[in-house]
Length: 244
Image: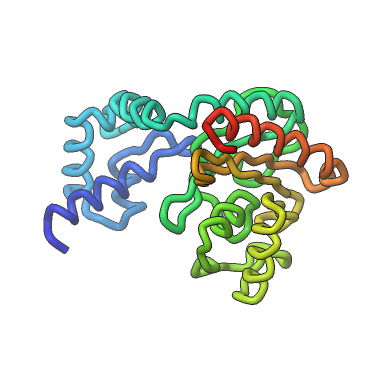
């Protein structure tokens, strides 16, 4: 790998390790986690800190830098659908008392770009802090891949006994999703957690994102009511974005 590409790859790997579960790392912990010499990791951290993407908060300790917030704001500001979709997501969470979220398709990866911060109650559900979701085992993932006409992701590990893992299962599931225009999962990512998802569309019928709900499986007894609220919220945003 050319040195420039290797340097960028190293920077991405370092930044990706900082998340809500681990917002601060020490140099020694990072070197141990990556299996790399301390000098190599220190060089990467120093470069990122100089660029404002990381902040040094103590002797050999680092956190994400404020410049990432500027980049994040610029990204969201460049997406015309994000603001109305985010507002609809928060209203949906308050109305259902469930965790609501927005997902997008990035190649063959399904990324959760926003989660509701208010309105939900009840027991925790799987993936409350995950950025990348298992595309074959979540409602949003299955919906976005199916509407994009993509095949079963590989690998497709069996996360529970209900996870779809074969091309035959995937073909049947995607045909159903395209026919009904929404998706659900039941205990496919983790036993006890289920989800619902509906597409947010723009002009020309383009699929922009998936609006979803994550819920404890027992609340699937409210499936029809929850699905109606979800579809109404997604349709409202889609209409505002020019989908007819």
